[in-house]
Image (cartoon, rainbow, N blue to C red):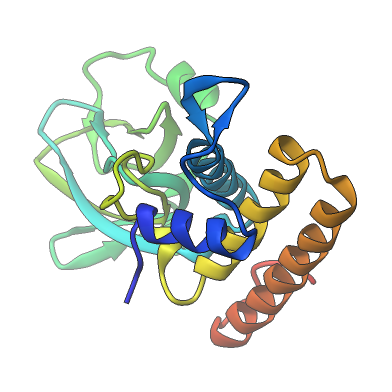
Length: 218
Protein backbone atom coordinates (compact mmCIF):
# COMPACT_ATOMS: atom_id res chain seq x y z
CA UNK A 1 0.00 0.00 0.00
CA UNK A 2 1.30 3.44 -0.93
CA UNK A 3 2.38 5.55 2.03
CA UNK A 4 1.64 9.22 2.68
CA UNK A 5 3.85 12.30 2.54
CA UNK A 6 3.95 12.41 6.35
CA UNK A 7 4.80 8.69 6.60
CA UNK A 8 7.77 9.06 4.28
CA UNK A 9 9.04 12.20 6.02
CA UNK A 10 8.86 10.45 9.39
CA UNK A 11 10.75 7.43 8.06
CA UNK A 12 13.56 9.60 6.70
CA UNK A 13 13.81 11.53 9.98
CA UNK A 14 14.06 8.25 11.87
CA UNK A 15 16.62 6.83 9.45
CA UNK A 16 18.79 9.93 9.79
CA UNK A 17 18.24 10.16 13.57
CA UNK A 18 16.80 13.67 13.43
CA UNK A 19 14.10 15.38 15.46
CA UNK A 20 11.64 16.89 13.02
CA UNK A 21 10.81 19.80 15.34
CA UNK A 22 14.42 21.04 15.63
CA UNK A 23 14.69 24.62 14.37
CA UNK A 24 17.15 25.46 11.62
CA UNK A 25 18.65 28.94 11.47
CA UNK A 26 16.36 29.94 14.32
CA UNK A 27 13.30 30.08 12.08
CA UNK A 28 10.11 28.46 13.32
CA UNK A 29 9.06 27.74 9.74
CA UNK A 30 12.32 25.91 8.99
CA UNK A 31 12.85 22.59 10.75
CA UNK A 32 14.34 19.24 9.90
CA UNK A 33 10.83 18.09 9.01
CA UNK A 34 10.31 20.90 6.49
CA UNK A 35 13.80 20.25 5.08
CA UNK A 36 13.01 16.55 4.61
CA UNK A 37 9.73 17.38 2.91
CA UNK A 38 11.52 19.75 0.55
CA UNK A 39 13.95 16.94 -0.24
CA UNK A 40 11.06 14.58 -1.00
CA UNK A 41 9.54 17.04 -3.47
CA UNK A 42 12.96 17.48 -5.10
CA UNK A 43 13.20 13.70 -5.39
CA UNK A 44 9.77 13.45 -7.03
CA UNK A 45 10.73 16.11 -9.59
CA UNK A 46 13.92 14.19 -10.30
CA UNK A 47 11.94 10.98 -10.82
CA UNK A 48 9.60 12.73 -13.24
CA UNK A 49 12.60 13.56 -15.42
CA UNK A 50 14.71 10.43 -15.11
CA UNK A 51 12.10 7.70 -14.60
CA UNK A 52 9.22 9.29 -16.51
CA UNK A 53 8.40 5.92 -18.12
CA UNK A 54 7.58 4.26 -14.78
CA UNK A 55 3.90 5.25 -14.88
CA UNK A 56 1.73 4.99 -17.96
CA UNK A 57 -1.94 5.68 -18.48
CA UNK A 58 -4.53 6.27 -21.17
CA UNK A 59 -7.53 8.54 -21.56
CA UNK A 60 -10.15 9.37 -24.13
CA UNK A 61 -10.63 12.96 -25.23
CA UNK A 62 -13.14 14.25 -27.78
CA UNK A 63 -12.54 17.01 -30.29
CA UNK A 64 -15.87 18.44 -31.43
CA UNK A 65 -16.91 18.96 -35.04
CA UNK A 66 -15.24 21.90 -36.75
CA UNK A 67 -12.51 22.32 -34.14
CA UNK A 68 -8.91 21.17 -33.88
CA UNK A 69 -7.84 20.80 -30.24
CA UNK A 70 -8.64 19.51 -26.78
CA UNK A 71 -6.77 19.81 -23.42
CA UNK A 72 -5.08 16.63 -22.23
CA UNK A 73 -5.61 15.11 -18.75
CA UNK A 74 -4.11 16.98 -15.80
CA UNK A 75 -1.75 14.07 -15.09
CA UNK A 76 -0.27 14.11 -18.63
CA UNK A 77 3.54 14.14 -18.55
CA UNK A 78 4.60 12.93 -21.99
CA UNK A 79 3.12 11.31 -25.07
CA UNK A 80 3.36 7.66 -26.08
CA UNK A 81 0.89 7.60 -28.97
CA UNK A 82 -2.60 8.64 -30.09
CA UNK A 83 -5.22 6.77 -32.09
CA UNK A 84 -8.89 7.23 -32.95
CA UNK A 85 -11.79 5.32 -34.49
CA UNK A 86 -13.88 6.32 -37.49
CA UNK A 87 -16.64 4.07 -38.88
CA UNK A 88 -15.26 1.09 -36.92
CA UNK A 89 -11.81 1.66 -38.41
CA UNK A 90 -8.88 2.35 -36.09
CA UNK A 91 -6.51 5.09 -37.21
CA UNK A 92 -2.97 5.34 -35.91
CA UNK A 93 0.58 5.50 -37.27
CA UNK A 94 0.07 2.62 -39.71
CA UNK A 95 -2.87 4.42 -41.33
CA UNK A 96 -0.87 7.62 -41.68
CA UNK A 97 -1.98 9.46 -38.53
CA UNK A 98 1.38 11.15 -37.91
CA UNK A 99 2.84 12.98 -34.95
CA UNK A 100 4.62 16.06 -36.30
CA UNK A 101 6.20 19.15 -34.69
CA UNK A 102 3.61 21.68 -33.53
CA UNK A 103 5.01 24.47 -35.69
CA UNK A 104 4.68 22.26 -38.77
CA UNK A 105 1.09 21.38 -37.93
CA UNK A 106 0.03 24.99 -37.36
CA UNK A 107 1.59 25.97 -40.69
CA UNK A 108 -0.86 23.60 -42.44
CA UNK A 109 -3.88 25.71 -41.46
CA UNK A 110 -3.86 27.98 -44.51
CA UNK A 111 -7.49 27.04 -45.12
CA UNK A 112 -9.34 27.70 -41.87
CA UNK A 113 -12.43 25.88 -43.03
CA UNK A 114 -10.81 22.62 -44.13
CA UNK A 115 -12.34 19.62 -42.39
CA UNK A 116 -11.92 15.87 -42.64
CA UNK A 117 -10.45 12.80 -41.00
CA UNK A 118 -7.40 13.83 -38.95
CA UNK A 119 -4.12 13.01 -40.66
CA UNK A 120 -1.58 14.69 -38.37
CA UNK A 121 -1.34 15.69 -34.74
CA UNK A 122 0.91 17.51 -32.30
CA UNK A 123 1.09 18.32 -28.60
CA UNK A 124 1.59 21.88 -27.41
CA UNK A 125 1.31 23.07 -23.80
CA UNK A 126 -0.56 19.88 -22.83
CA UNK A 127 -3.15 20.36 -25.58
CA UNK A 128 -3.75 17.88 -28.42
CA UNK A 129 -4.02 19.52 -31.86
CA UNK A 130 -5.03 17.74 -35.06
CA UNK A 131 -5.10 18.57 -38.76
CA UNK A 132 -7.44 19.09 -40.47
CA UNK A 133 -10.40 20.28 -38.38
CA UNK A 134 -12.50 17.24 -37.55
CA UNK A 135 -15.63 16.86 -39.69
CA UNK A 136 -17.50 15.12 -36.85
CA UNK A 137 -17.10 14.74 -33.10
CA UNK A 138 -14.04 12.48 -32.83
CA UNK A 139 -12.82 10.62 -29.76
CA UNK A 140 -9.08 10.07 -29.45
CA UNK A 141 -7.40 7.55 -27.17
CA UNK A 142 -4.23 9.09 -25.79
CA UNK A 143 -1.56 6.81 -24.32
CA UNK A 144 0.83 8.76 -22.16
CA UNK A 145 3.35 8.91 -19.35
CA UNK A 146 1.72 9.94 -16.11
CA UNK A 147 2.63 12.46 -13.41
CA UNK A 148 1.08 13.70 -10.17
CA UNK A 149 -1.63 16.31 -10.60
CA UNK A 150 -0.06 18.18 -7.66
CA UNK A 151 2.94 17.80 -5.40
CA UNK A 152 2.28 16.63 -1.83
CA UNK A 153 1.80 19.38 0.75
CA UNK A 154 -0.12 17.93 3.67
CA UNK A 155 0.92 14.90 5.71
CA UNK A 156 -1.92 12.76 4.34
CA UNK A 157 -1.18 13.64 0.69
CA UNK A 158 0.01 10.87 -1.60
CA UNK A 159 2.02 10.63 -4.80
CA UNK A 160 2.10 8.05 -7.57
CA UNK A 161 5.81 7.80 -6.71
CA UNK A 162 4.94 6.50 -3.23
CA UNK A 163 3.86 3.16 -4.70
CA UNK A 164 5.50 -0.02 -3.42
CA UNK A 165 7.62 -0.25 -6.56
CA UNK A 166 9.07 3.27 -6.53
CA UNK A 167 8.85 4.68 -3.00
CA UNK A 168 12.37 3.49 -2.11
CA UNK A 169 13.77 5.34 -5.10
CA UNK A 170 12.15 8.52 -3.79
CA UNK A 171 13.36 7.82 -0.25
CA UNK A 172 16.97 7.27 -1.30
CA UNK A 173 17.05 10.34 -3.55
CA UNK A 174 15.42 12.46 -0.82
CA UNK A 175 17.98 11.27 1.72
CA UNK A 176 20.76 12.18 -0.70
CA UNK A 177 19.40 15.74 -1.01
CA UNK A 178 18.76 16.01 2.75
CA UNK A 179 22.33 15.03 3.61
CA UNK A 180 23.79 17.22 0.88
CA UNK A 181 21.65 20.36 1.16
CA UNK A 182 20.63 20.48 4.82
CA UNK A 183 23.13 18.42 6.81
CA UNK A 184 26.10 19.52 4.68
CA UNK A 185 27.46 16.00 4.55
CA UNK A 186 28.39 15.39 0.89
CA UNK A 187 30.28 12.15 1.60
CA UNK A 188 27.20 10.53 3.14
CA UNK A 189 25.01 12.07 0.46
CA UNK A 190 27.12 10.36 -2.19
CA UNK A 191 26.46 6.93 -0.71
CA UNK A 192 22.71 7.52 -1.03
CA UNK A 193 23.18 8.88 -4.55
CA UNK A 194 24.86 5.62 -5.55
CA UNK A 195 22.16 3.57 -3.83
CA UNK A 196 19.46 5.55 -5.62
CA UNK A 197 21.22 4.99 -8.95
CA UNK A 198 21.42 1.24 -8.34
CA UNK A 199 17.70 1.20 -7.53
CA UNK A 200 16.92 3.10 -10.73
CA UNK A 201 18.94 0.67 -12.84
CA UNK A 202 17.16 -2.28 -11.27
CA UNK A 203 13.80 -0.64 -11.95
CA UNK A 204 14.83 -0.09 -15.59
CA UNK A 205 15.74 -3.76 -15.96
CA UNK A 206 12.41 -4.86 -14.52
CA UNK A 207 10.53 -2.42 -16.73
CA UNK A 208 12.33 -3.48 -19.90
CA UNK A 209 11.67 -7.13 -19.09
CA UNK A 210 7.94 -6.43 -18.84
CA UNK A 211 7.75 -4.41 -22.07
CA UNK A 212 7.48 -5.65 -25.62
CA UNK A 213 9.96 -2.93 -26.55
CA UNK A 214 12.91 -1.55 -24.59
CA UNK A 215 12.41 1.86 -22.98
CA UNK A 216 16.07 2.64 -22.57
CA UNK A 217 19.43 1.03 -22.05
CA UNK A 218 20.91 0.52 -18.63
